[in-house]
Image (tube, rainbow over all chains, first blue to last red; front, side, top):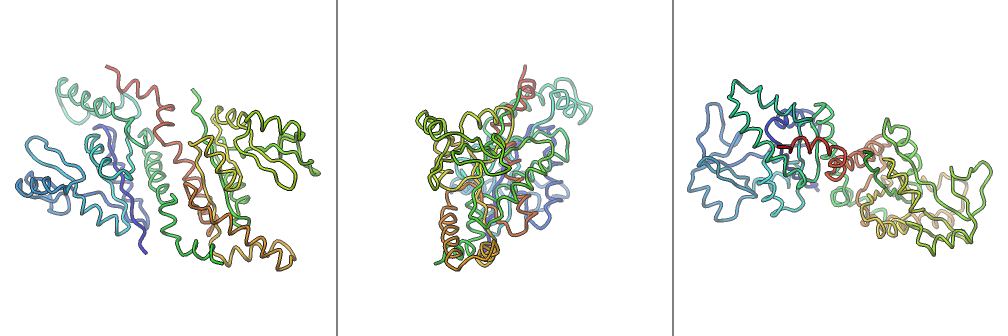
Length: 208
Length: 208
């Protein structure tokens, strides 16, 4: 019997280093199957983006039909384009024993939590305000106004940290990866997972 | 500010290897403070046993006074002697940031859970029925009746595995130690602990 995978939400303000952490996590997954969820979107593919790999590219009509049918764990409209996480696609991955990561913001996290209360939510934090500011600044030659805007958005994201199950502070990068691995591995040791995995053992131990 | 330690219950049938696992866990604790709780008992000290180290040795009258005053997280009477876990002693350890392990059975676990719902409970399991039988057998030249008795008791303990938060199967010893470390480390990454530990960080991140 395949033991179901677990669903994780990873949220962070821009500048917390989430993308690099997820990349390292997938590279160090060893024998365990882990995947980042592929979102649906109505925006046009950019050069190099593949359908089904970077996004599932769908039409606006198709997306709205899926909304109406309640097919998304979460969805949002950003600058006139839709983005969403398909329930059926995620559940199929989980049923194959794959751990799935959703890279979404606190609003998406709230929606998923409503539909799937067993989701494990992780908030990734920069190590200090100065570090956050310098990371937001180093992204290019932006005006003070643009930086201030990014900072305000990062703060808005951070203000929801109390809604998450776990907090990982990305101070030492390797330690942060280890922390994420601990949270992921811990889920597999929970009674619900272990009684699935070791059902035959418990049957044998408890037999007359 | 000292971040509180966490309280863990480790239960197992006799023959699951719990004592060796706890020993290895304490040896590999690195910089983190971990201690096994010292129980109170009314039985006489055996040669080599020190008061306050192996047990807190108290009189029957003293123990019964503590029961009446509700001073135990859990207690039991075994063959005419009392054994119990003092709430004040544990709470003082936790307040110092020490992770505390209670080495008790499912009945004790039930009592502690009632008084302290935040306790994390772990059930340690032998890898197979044959292995359990052979471990119970290898303890000496006992009669079949004695072995059958031990087996029945082990099965009775195992029948409560569904009441625990986590299950660790002691198949590969090193992996079992790692699994215990994961559950322990995971607790420290929970929001409640991390918001204590990084209170200043969140204040700074959210300041105007």
